[in-house]
Length: 226
Length: 92
Image 1 (cartoon, rainbow over the protein chains, first blue to last red):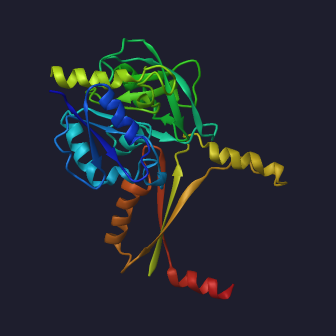
Image 2 (image 1 turned 90 degrees about the horizontal axis):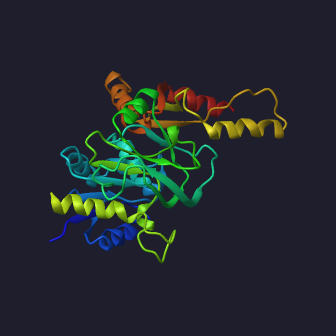
């Protein structure tokens, strides 16, 4: 028996298919979820994929945050269900306040699309257990609203509690405060990051490495051993 | 119908690279003397019925929960007299 991972599609989502494929590549069952549907179809975890949901109108993630599916996702996340937000999904998670801080336009105002080195700072969340603490991974990054900001008090709290899950290595591509690429909630079940692990799960495509696969095998371990 | 305007601005401590880009473009266009530019959003809400305290409280809630993200933005709610606006337009 394997676990069921829901992948939400909003109008304007781009990476739902790649995410479903990554979920299946790790040996999990991928369950498509529709933004207008409150029903999560009894999934064990949810991924909010990348893209430009609702055209990023108002603010990235601001409109998706109020969609029917998010009502249930927010409630379930608070009850402990693992949730991963990638890129636009991370933006949605900050808009819901499941994760603190906010995402803003890159400091250089350009869209970036590159392979990005990250350091795994916390290998104990639901989504990072397959990695080692301090491990360096290389996965694609592609966005224009990738600058993570939060006030000093929140940043200090994140650092003190080990909730900075990923930091940009070598180069800070967007002006994110303290080089933050991804964070978690206090419980570690909700994780958000800007780079795209789902684009780096097969050696034939993307970076040519499978550094992103660990997200999906982490959740498999968590769900199947639980 | 009365109009209520909600202005949303990034908090002063938040870096605004878009505003900076506008500011840096000004001298090139021959406009001197602008030390700083910050870019925000303006929402014009046409309100059905009277703009009383209850309506304003509702608009305040709309601004706080949706139009602005108060983690990074401040907002300001102003009532505009629709008739005065229409008269001004007719004059010009």
